[in-house]
Length: 273
Image 1: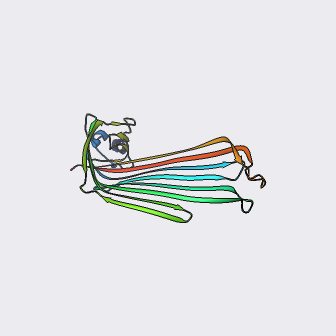
Image 2: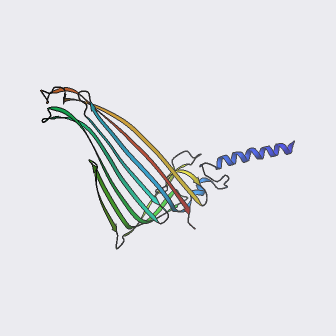
Image 3: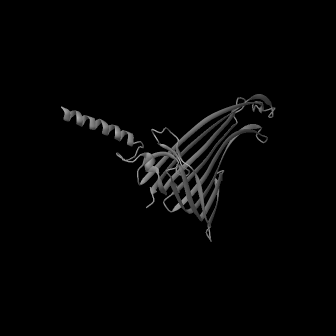
């Protein structure tokens, strides 16, 4: 009986110990070092994938005529790092769709036309890059960055009436410009001392998905959305009296703007050998 109770006590202790050690989704199943001890050391950025998409959709209508004005403006920033090359890509993708009515003097009638246009502007900047962070036991950190310009490409296109105009540039930097700078500060846990999942340590900041002696994985996701509707009293064309093509009536113009932002950031750090 004593042996059974002894084994049961060990099992309970082990379960409690394992649960308290494993915090992040991909943390080691068992670790005999505290989270503070595991984070202390020198870490080198291994890879990174960052994406931020901002979209603004605007729709304008009124209660007097059928005129509409719509726009969809999207900016997507993507930064990727493979251990050597860092690529910053930015894409501005803007679409416009309008419908309006006008008086045609030749046919003596009202005609409704629609127009669509699209602008896309893309930039790609490529660098060689490195980041090294030392996390110290006195809750300070120091970071060293090195960045060298390698190449820049840009492209733009404009589409309207079924016609597209495109321009491109391609620049390779020679001589290449290398910059090195340092950063120092205090590091701390942003959540409770029991969890220690959310760290702030300069470039090594975010939600710890994995914390081991040799590797750190940080993943941060953020989503935001808002809708705003405004109303204005305006004098608007009625487009109802062919004998008075510029007849107006007071009405309400409604503009609805929806903004969404989605951000994801995944970085992997490895212990300096």
